[in-house]
Image 1 (cartoon, helix red, strand yellow):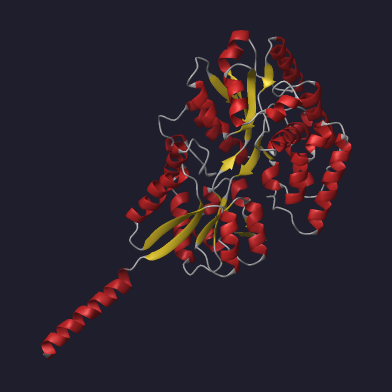
Image 2 (tube, rainbow, N blue to C red):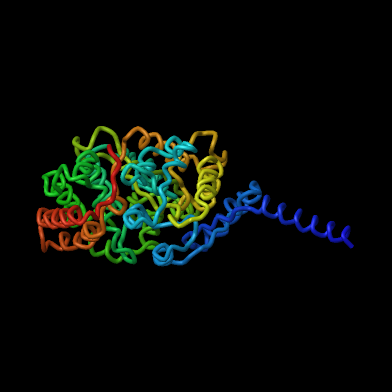
Length: 441
């Protein structure tokens, strides 16, 4: 009997210690749900990570409206180990409330500052420590009908004089210089404002205004708005005029571009996928270019505006922050894997700001897309970048930029009055400590 009891106890103890020793640490990650993205993330991140690791089990929970979901969880001291947000401005609020864990010790341990582009790393630094990592980046460029340009002997413009001369030639052919529209997304206006701020006033001046060293009422910003007003209202550059611009939605203006009603499409890099798809159905070819510089004060070479499309952070209440950091590092350490995932998503999601090299790319990648990825990394990695309004503006000044731009276009206020209100809102945001961090330039 004793022998049987001893054998039983030995079996129980062995099972107990085996379970205690080899049980995997579970890391839960809440992500924004998307019907296209979710299965790709599950297969190539979650399943792949779990297949490679016995000590950590990764579980991703896909959530609708992540920001509304994560806020009450963090406030209650519960929630996941890792969580997403729509952008750095949201993290600033959580960091101020002590709801986000500093990642600085893990950044130092794993060398994340070297793995991420400098501006991207700095976008998540608050009070000298890292709290978030961008999941995606985007910028503003323009696409053009390459076949149409070749047929007419048109060259890509490099300055304001060439932009306006090209626009005149295009209009003389009965086409619009640019396709675009705001139906379905009124903040589309801020894309154009940011383009003119960065190509006319210039990134250095925008940076100084962001950190309070310049006023938004300074001449270079007022002149930027006046030039945009002229091109939109007086010259009808976008889809023939303001009325049409207001009436066109996503499918409309993309259709206008591919059907030769417009020669160019000034849009964010989220336009790569739809442009490639649409042009695959016609005989014309397409290409892209960086936005031309409209004033010498903006520099002597095109710049790329920085924008992040979501962040990842670790919950201050996480019981497994070391394991969570290991998951994040596993993603950051394999550029080819990240490119594979974002490539399957049309480079519209999970395009992480890493130092990509030629060897990281799938040999079948569209060379135009590859050129963007490498040129963006090279340019921004050496400090040649500008700033998008939706990434670097606090809430109230950001809403004002796109909402009241319509009042300028209607002629009800002047560009100077528009920028005076912008400055007032910036002053209040600065007073309320509501600014979004901007990395040192």
